[in-house]
Length: 297
Image 1 (cartoon, rainbow, N blue to C red):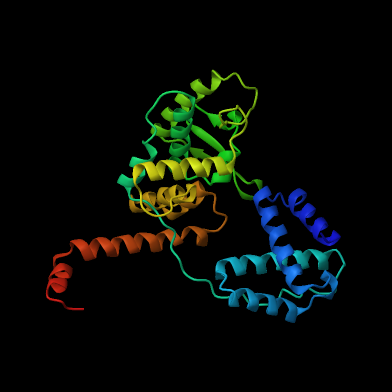
Image 2: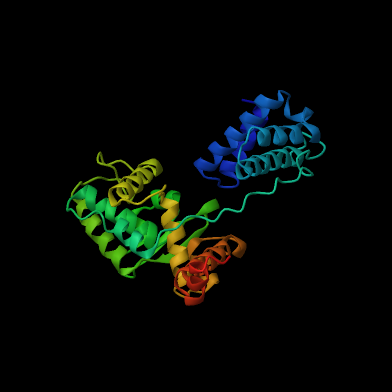
């Protein structure tokens, strides 16, 4: 790996507080770029980056993925320019491909309850899995935020959770009554393992549960529940936000609970809600049904 790439990744980790997942993504993006372009960073120009982006699009890569790679290149070359390795940032003037507008998937309230309440047995693993599902939905957590929780982050008496979000930004999130009950039950079972780890969620060997392990739990119970389509921890986060909006919660409140730095990131849920309302209208409104029965468009 190029020394300047190593220096950039170290800077992002130490100075900017990027997560391990983000660092892995940066490394992969840069390895892909320099494998394709085949020239050192100080020889890269605008045409190289434009050509790389065009090739990725020809390979039918998603525009979201290509935009992420371009953002990585902008950050990398901005770092090199600031450190004096290059005279200008060649990625600065390369425009982003217009991304596809895809609304995040969410579950209905009934589907969500069926999933979250699926683990019914007693014992360490079932109570742990129930607490995981309850917190993902009840607090709208990212999977990385859930995996990084420690015992010190929980205030059972006040029903509050300290969450470490992106760029180590902390926020306080209330824990709903059902999630709090599930969490208390799990902590009793966890204490019986007599492990010294401060991590809240442990695997069967008493080690911190990984993000992959959490994803597997969600997928397993979604299949057992009979939910169609791909369900992930982020599906529960989207469901949390969508259900709050449908219940009348203020968008700013949802922004704070989700830990979004910008309101624009939260505004996608207004489109979700409008889509839901239109669907309900089409199915329930007498005039809409009357038109469809007559075959009118």
